[in-house]
Image (tube, rainbow, N blue to C red):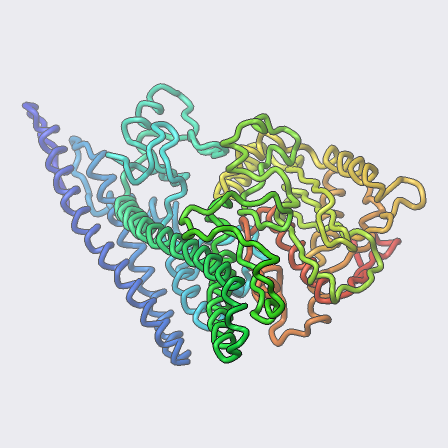
Length: 611
């Protein structure tokens, strides 16, 4: 297909450009409809695969997965072709020479495909397909290889990386003309980003930590963007419905607990007249027991599973039930009772009781670095946790099977960063009290990487958690972090440079050997530091767990152990601080179950980098 320009003037070039733009827009619209239908097909294939997996038709599931992979290749080509058509339609200007549109479109197609190409097996849609199948029989357990991933894919087909425009502040779902950067894939309001680019000769992406530079021809409304935004809107509507259902369930739960309290308060005055009729008393006893068991079991499950979402003030304390037998010597004249009144749907404020379960909140990461300036701001304090011990509460029953340990303190340790260490969190757990003593947490700034590589690495690693800005504000070189860590150990009398520099009555606890065996020596080498002697031995919690519980399925990592112990994971997986706290929760459970934690690995003195 060829074209010529109109050399006579009179608006020929603009007219030709306008025709191209209109034609390209129509073709893009048709392709976009095809893309939407293909995404619906992917969802349908996923649902069929789930049904087949439930029926143990593994061979058919594998065939369906191969079909998804083949369709994904076509799906990707369709999106690249649409982007190419749109790009040509927006930029084409007729010239004096014939235009080879076939070559022009093919060049644009290869440009988009080269920028974004990836194997279908690694596509988010394929990941979602496999995860849905995996969860049929192994829900809650990590998929193969996930434990070793530094960045875990999310259960989402969308490639939208930011939820608000960094310039206008509007949510992505409310943008009138959304556009996306070809290189960094961030989404912006078209008017705002084009103005930003025109005002800056070197327009760096306004997303914090993103190292990419923007050009007007590299910021486009690609064919998938509107589709993905519409899917986000649909998800928001579903979440609003789920939130409403959740609030209704919460109200019903609170009402049930209060009515149970009210019902149990009726028992003491009623028992004495019933003492002459044992059958009647026993009937009341059975009714109360049934109601108590039903309500408290439901309440415990409801509170445990929804604790991160319900404000503390809305969770009433469960009633204390005493059987009718405890009232056999009840003397109504000798004991008075408060006047009975119908239960209120508004619960009283929670008592100042250390055993009351608190709502989980993310830690303030400025606070862990000693840099929080909003500690007196009630809104900030309500949103973020500033006391790590709140997340670890034990009861008297947890000490019944506890056994003596070789150490007084365990230093739970979980590094983040594979090229260099990016995060260094350590949690001191008292082996006797099974509680938190203190937390040390530092972000670490790499020294052997370029600034551009660091920015890109940190954005990819921490941007999805929304803490990349905190990292940039607080990160220190590893040698400074190590100095502060040693001062912290000295403060707690757990280490001193004399006596060989080993830990005093304490041991590191890690989920695997990699942290202490491999990464610490590697970082010391990069930072030109001698490996500290307190890193010569450690406890691999996975080994102790495997030997103590001997589970049918091997515990490959933290998430598997938590799943097998029925401990819900809190926080963000692969945020080092949250992983350290979750590992500590597994540790405390094991201590309560009677496990003894000995040293499981020692480094050879003559070879500091090897065990």
